[in-house]
Image (cartoon, rainbow, N blue to C red):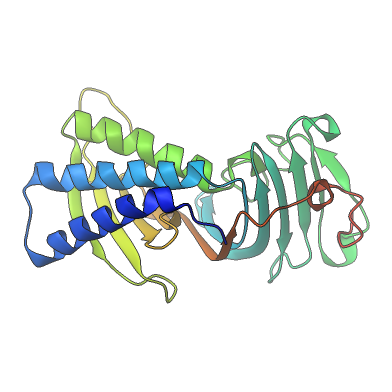
Length: 249
C-alpha cells in the first residue's frame, strides 16, 4: 500500500480537529468547516490513488423493498475500469466487468450457479443490468461517492441547510475512523440526495469506507461499506480483460 508523505501533515491536522471536537463542543460554523476540511482531504487522498481493490458491501432499497446485503470483490482502476465478483450469497459467483471505451462500453456479465454459462454484454443503464440495483456499475467506487457527498454537503453548508448531528472518532470495521452524521434541511425548492447521511472515513486511508443514506421518513435506502482496502496495487490490463483465465466470462 502506497501513501504519499505530502498528505501526512493534513491527516495529522484533521486528527487534531477531531480530537478538539471530542474534547469540547464547537459552534456550528466550526463544525461545518471541519466537515468541509474532511471532504477536501478525501478528495486529496483519492487524487493520489491510481487503482485499488476492496471487498465491497452494499444494501439498497429498490421499488420499496430493502434487498439483502451483497458482498463482492472489487477491482477499480482510473479512469473507469471495474471488475466485480460476488463472493457471498445470494449472488455468489456472479461477475461483471466494465472498461470505459472497451467492449462497446457494455457491461460484460454473467450470473452465478447454473445460470453462469451465459455471458451477456449489457448497457450499464439497461433494465437487465439495473435489476436489483439503484445505480449502474459505473457509479461504483470511492470517486463517485466522494463527489456525491461533496456536492450535497457543500451546497447545504453554503445555504445554511445542514444540521450536524455528530462528528468525531469512531471505530468502523475494527479500524480507527471518523464518523459524520448530518441531516439536510432543504429550502427554496432545493433537493438533496438524502435527508440524513451517516459517513465513516478511515483515518489511515482518509477515504469514505462506509456510508448510509436515509430518506425523508428516515428510512434507509442505501448502505455501502468497503473493507480490506488496498491502494495502488498496480493492476495490469489483464485484470480488466474478459480473457483473464481466473474469470469466467
